[in-house]
Amino acid sequence: MKNNLTFGLIICCCFIFIKCKTTTEKQTDNSSFKSGKKWLDTNSEHINAHGGGIMFHEGVYYWFGEHKTEGRGGNTTLFGVRCYSSTDLYHWKNEGIALQVVENLDSEITKGAVIERPKVVFNKKTGKYVMWFHLELKGQGYNAARTGVAISDSPTGPFKYIKSFRPNAGTWPMNFKEAWKIEPDNSPLKWWTPEWYTYIKEGGFVRRDFESGQMSRDMTVFVDDDEKAYHIHSSEDNLTLHISELTDDYLDFTDKWITLAPAGHNEAPAIFKDEDTYYMITSGCTGWDPNEARSFKAKSIWGPWESLGNPSIGKDAELTFNSQSTYILPVEGKEHAFIFMADRWTPTNPIDGTYVWLPIEINQGKPVIKWYEKWDLNFFNK
Ligand code: DGJ
Image 1 (spheres, rainbow, N blue to C red):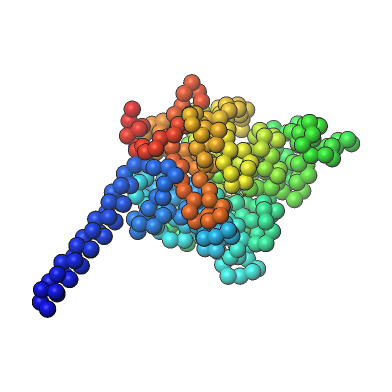
Image 2: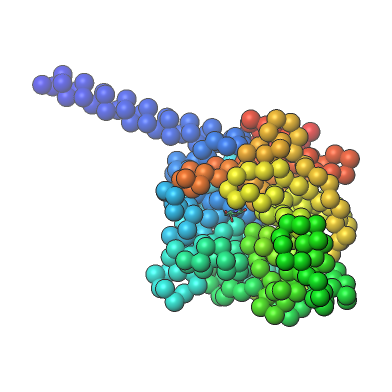
């Protein structure tokens, strides 16, 4: 009897030891970036922060993203925007839901609405954390095309929802010609014809949405060196990108905005600034399926933006390594160090989506992204 007990105890201890060891191994294994693989948080759960963005504040990186759920409908928002924190970019602690959807059908962020691509920025003037996100109203598919804003006193939330809207109602872009403000007599009716493309490039949809506000779907927010912030979004039925200045408190739009790459069909905008040049990386529009990324650069946020083509090179470059851009992260304390963050979507079970993180190199004035099976921040010490 005594022998049996001792034997049982030994087996039990071995089991606990092996379990602890594998858990630690999973964690210590997080000392490099392995794109497309499950990425475990400090609780050993796959990180659930899709379409995300990162804010660095007082020594900590905060990763905000869409909390996806299981099954085909897992893209509708049943919980909200999740936040993780990290000091080294490899190990992420789950900080919970930063912006929660509500059980109230009268609310724009009711459970079952769609909240995508949340981006959080800190406003030095007000001391508040501001979250912008793409919002689709419950039961309306992707027709609402609104941008939403929420605010918090703490980086991890809770964020308080303020409002959503279609931006820039009643204002023309700064790069819009006078002649384009008037609808031509011969507006082409048939989509995708050469005449129709010219019509879009000459502001057909900007005029269409002038009164009601411009559509706003895939988006990001960028804070410049002078603390001015910009909201960049796919508009005009995803045909044209819009760049808009935010007010000093980051809670609204000023009247300053431009169009970028009219009729170019860009989604998933991600932006960074290296020295005095702004670079943008976007995707094409193929729903959840990956496509070839595009890149642009400009000396001023207001353009002119020069198109630089596909930044990816090597195998699977034409599919952005099976991913779609979401954010470009400047690595703190390192010069010219930027991480391309992208999503490898799994629409049949959105919670399984993985993350593609790759270093960006600037080569002959162009951003270049190459595939690395495994890499770490020493890459930037070269
Ligand atoms: C592509 C976008 O980039 C995603 O954020 C999401 O809106 C899907 N389309 C929906 O099909």
